[in-house]
Length: 150
Image (cartoon, rainbow, N blue to C red; front, side, top):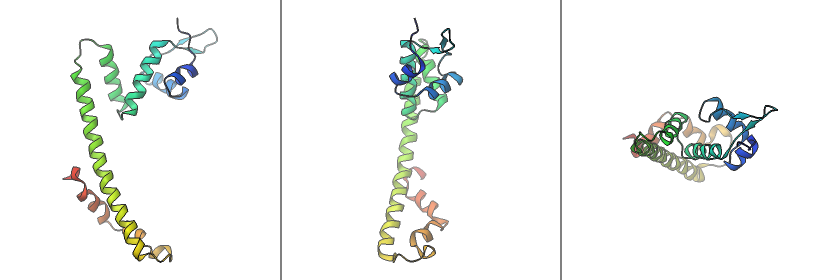
């Protein structure tokens, strides 16, 4: 019998009540049962399902990808290779993002290094970092440095 209130469900799945309500609203979680006073009530299966959803979101999966993964959990006729393919796609997206962040880090490090020798603490318009940021080639240069943009 369901006996968990929304706060307890959220605590056990390490999330919060608004997130639980949102996942119910968009259909990732089934609508909760209600007690006499209208309070939502949940059970251990809801804890497991919400924990699964939270872990998927923590891994960067989109809502639609989580929806697909939750359907895979429930449907014994579908292949686990679908989950592998989604995870592989997510890994590739994260790798591309890391490449972009690495290029951005190099660009910002260069700004800081350059400003160490040219910055005299003068007026903002004379700042070398601000001048570099206003150059259109900055984004292009960062993308050229990123292996994923080749």
